[in-house]
Every structure is written in C-alpha cells, then in structure tokens.
Image (cartoon, rainbow, N blue to C red; front, top):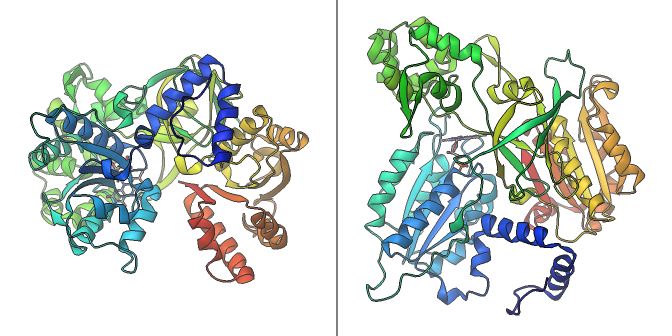
Length: 581
Ligand SMILES: Cc1cc2nc3c(=O)[nH]c(=O)nc-3n(C[C@H](O)[C@H](O)[C@H](O)COP(=O)(O)O)c2cc1C
C-alpha cells in the first residue's frame, strides 16, 4: 500500500514513520485503520484545509463519555441538511485564540468530576479563563448546550461557566443556554431545532457542501448500536472472599471494525439485577408483561426495567411523579423546597426505598417515563488487538459503596462479575485519546496504577511486544496482598523477561501498612528525574482520590528538586496522562 501524494502536514520523521507503518500493514489492517481514523478523528477530514477555508459555524464539544460528541455530530448533520456550513471539533483540540476567526460557535459540553469541565477539555477552559491569554470575542455569536446530572451538587457547572465567560469576553448569545439532565435527548433536540433557525444559511444557489465532520459515517458501534459479545472466560484474579474481588473477563470479538487502540475502553450496557427488577414489580404491583415505550420502541415493562431504566438513583422527575401519586406531604415538601431539599431526600433513598416507604400503584408507562435512563459504564481494555485481535479483555472489580447506613453494590460490576461463559454482553468502543501511547516508540513510560488501573498497562505492554518495540517501561503498582492480588503477575513477568519492563515496584498495603503508591517513586527521585530527562511520559490510572494523592506527592517532590512549575511544564507538553475513576 502506498500513501497518495497530498502535501503531507507532518514533520519528516512523522511522515517516514507513517510510511513504514503503512508498508507493514496488510489489506485488512489498512482497511481497519482507515475506518478507525475516519470514525474517531474529526480533524482528519480537514487535512490540507487552510484556516481561511474554515466554515462559519464551529460546533465544539467537551466530553468524557461521548454524549456531547454524539449530539454535536448529529447537529452537524442537521446543519448540512439545512444548508448551514458547519465543522465539528473536540474542545480538546481547540485553542481559545482560534475562536477569534469564528463568527458562530455552538458549544455542547458536559460537566464531570465535581463540577469540573470534561478532562480533555480542561486546557481550553483554563486558557479561556486566563485574562492574560484569553482572546476578545467581539465578533462571535455563540450558544451553549450544557449536559449534566441534577443529582450532582454542581449541576451543569462547566456549561454555565463557559456561557458566562464567552459573554464576558464580548461574545453575543444566539440563544439562552440550555441545561440538560441525564435524559437530555428531548430537550437537546428541541433547543438545537430552535438554534438552527438562528444560524446563517448558505446562498441558495451554492451547492450544499459536504459536512466537514469526518465522523459523518459515524462509528460502527456506539451506545445506540452496541456489539453483542460472548463471554469466553470469567475468572477471579484475587482471593474470592475479598469484599471487592477483581475478575478477568475475556469476550469473543468477531467484529474487525471494532475500533480500539491500547489505552481505550469499552462502554458496557449492563442489565439491572433480576432481584431488583422483581422487587420493583412487587412494590408497584405491576406485571412485567405490560407494554411500555422507551425512546419510541415498544417493549414489555420488564425489558424497560432491565435494560433502559436506572432503578438505583431516583432523580428529580421521579421524585415529582412519586410525590404527586402518593400525595405524601413529606415528598411534596421536598419537591417544593427546590434542588437542595430534593438532594437531601435522594441522598437517603434509592428508587426501591421510595417505592416501599411511600407505597402506591403507578401506571407502567408513567413510571418508565419518570425514571432516569440507565447509563453505560466504561471499562478499560486489558488487551491489545494487535496481540489478540479476536478477544476483548476486561478487569472488573466489584464496586461497593456506603449508602444510608448500608452497603450497596454497583450495577455494572455486579452484572459483569455474575456473567458465565456463553452469556453475552452489549458494548461499544470508547476512545481515551489522552491515554494513548506516545508516537515515538523510544519514549520511556512510567506506568503508575492502583488495582484495576493496571488493565491498560497490560494492553500497552502486549502492543509494544507485538510490534517488536524496545520502549523502556517502569511499572509502579499498589494492591492489597502479594500472593493474591498481584494482578496479571505472569504477564508482567513476561514483559520483564522480554526486556520491556525495566523496573517493577509494588506496594502491597495489607502487608506494608502505611506504605503508599507514591512511595517507591519518592524513594527513587533521582531515577525518576533521569527518566523524565530522557523524555518519559507518566501515566496514572485507577481510583481518582488515591491516584490524585500519589500524583500530588510526586509533583511536590519533583518541583522541590527542579523548581516550581516543572510539573506544569510536563502537563503542558502532554507528557502526563490520567485515567481516573
Ligand atoms: C464521574 C462523573 C462525574 C460527573 N459529575 C457531574 C457534575 O459534577 N455535575 C453535573 O452536572 N454532571 C456530572 N456528571 C454527569 C455528566 O455531565 C452527564 O452524564 C453527561 O451527559 C455526560 O456527557 P458526556 O458523555 O459528553 O461526557 C458526571 C458524570 C460522571 C460519569
């Protein structure tokens, strides 16, 4: 296969590497790669496009779990049909200064963390917030669609902040901001339909330009069109009597167009547990056979409860519905009191608690309409398709959380852990663009993980070994006990034997009380500095709080040694990669 003769927008080294790779690929691999790039990267369609050709409307999205991206892409398609020239971009790739050239901007952004912007979009938000660098946006007409979840205290904060900031910088609002809860489809659709009327159409005698969103074709699999994959293996990796055991799952992959790279994840569409569905039917006196409709699709109530509705977190709409139906003074008071009092009730009650504490006989359709949609859950892939192209491997820990004085189990982890060989699971690929391997195969990697955070590193090492790379890697891993909890120990031993893993440092906290994940790195600051001087990239994966703490300790030690601001420089140079949950 040869590359065609467009003037390439790459450095000579990059272009040479691309050539080398293309020559290595067989037809199937080349086809896969072209589909992958087309499906994933909106910027690829604009290769060779000069800035002055940029269409008037920029539809920019900030996302972690793809809802905003999907809305942005569907909106771009609508714009094309309506004769509005539009381009879609991930905010992760937009620099605030680029907005100066734009006349029209539509931002669709989620809020994540604890009221934070989506992690990939953070540099954009920070750049815009900084008075020293933010551009004046006098000529810009903008509108913001904010996605969020009203059970979080900081509802839609990222969208709100962005909306206010664009105005403060001189932009003019095309339409009032729309805030959407987890059932965002209908309000988003209505708002976008109003917005499109306010956007400039092309002259009627000019030919409708093709949409510049390269994702027009759309990914082959997504949360609306998941792949059904069969479970081949479901094996406990830790002591089975641990409160939160960790399993290794292998799934059959019979879809060559399932586009995932090392560092990517899959979104799993889990079913609610049968006993919870039975308890909901029992408490409401409804029959699972009763017909209902979900997003226009008719189905029996039991299917809607199993696959489509969140039976754990009630949400404001359900609370309102239940207060009306039961005529309960306490619930009505909570609803009337606004978000704060509602949140106080939701902190103490899951759906089943409300059904039992305030019994009533609901209408099946109304019940389904009031419950929140069941959200997919992301799991990092633990294998590289370049090493095993017909399997997907997942590392799943039983998730338990305290709730109103008792312990609850996470729906998706319980579902996955209970699956048997021969069962099937619905899933779709999820790209973690900021958690991929660096382009240069010689770049050293420091891989820091706690628990299941080790999964993507297994994928990295498999990929590097399959590609015959000699990338120096250093693994730092924390778990409970050496004998039982050294996840994938044999794989990492193999990577040690084949020379990829230069160092392995472990912390087994049940056996080394007080020792933390960051300690091996702090004890080897010289070595770490040396790796960083050689251009190492650092990866952090696992529990958000523990990894954030580990990073803070390493950052402080590093800045103390080299001077304040060095860690920030690493981040700016995109040498810090975080995958926290
Ligand atoms: C880990 C996590 C944290 C979240 N934090 C917030 C939050 O603080 N405020 C909020 O309004 N929504 C929050 N959300 C909800 C998301 O904004 C919402 O699910 C949105 O539809 C996701 O859009 P995306 O798929 O484009 O990322 C959070 C979701 C997740 C998974």
